[in-house]
Length: 135
Image (cartoon, rainbow, N blue to C red; front, side, top):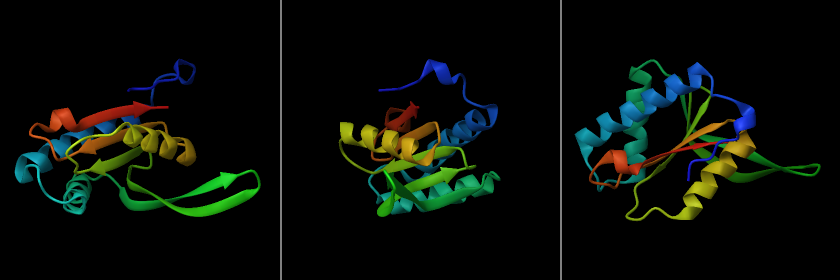
């Protein structure tokens, strides 16, 4: 389910460029390693590939939850934040679940970012494992 709020307009060129680089890097990693490995292996290799491309990439970025006047460290973490504009959630699962979409949409809302990529490396063709979600 791709989501876009038409009132917010097009994404900035920087965000689109970063997203394109993430998808291209995911293709390269998947082509080299194939499916069947742990999520942490794909995360490490994808971060390496993105850094080789000159993209600043943060791993396991903590996201606080704010409820009324409470600020909670609820243990929520973005798998990757690329170029401070694209949230990347990685999976290595047999079946994608609707809760994964909800998870990344919530991460986008809490982090203030608009574009998220949900990437499942446990697929024969990586193009079938990439989903783009926009707030």
